[in-house]
Image 1 (spheres, helix red, strand yellow):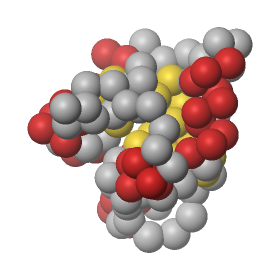
Image 2 (spheres, helix red, strand yellow):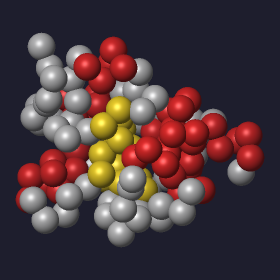
Image 3 (tube, helix red, strand yellow):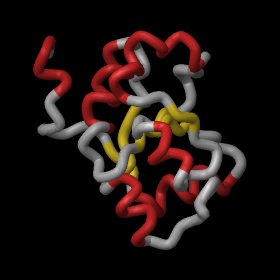
Image 4 (cartoon, one colour):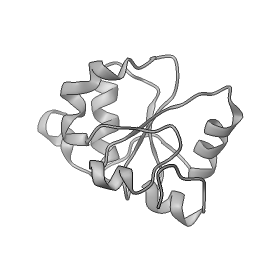
Length: 119
């Protein structure tokens, strides 16, 4: 996709907030949750267990994450726009299980699901 991979348009695989909550809670699925928002956004509240790497740094820092390609990887942003290019980047690096949180953190908050780091 080249430079078009950064456009926040189009479709990538998704999981709903309820599905991600179940995955995080069940203790067996163990999703790898990557929050691609800016640090201040992440510190204000995030999905429990999420790690933060802004989408603009993901490609160059992907090796730091030590991701397990056999486990699901869920990319999250505020409104499911920055997570689209994040999923494309992850898939380009061989992580076929990468998907995004449908609706982003806005949907997570609306569903009143647990937060870590919230004030």
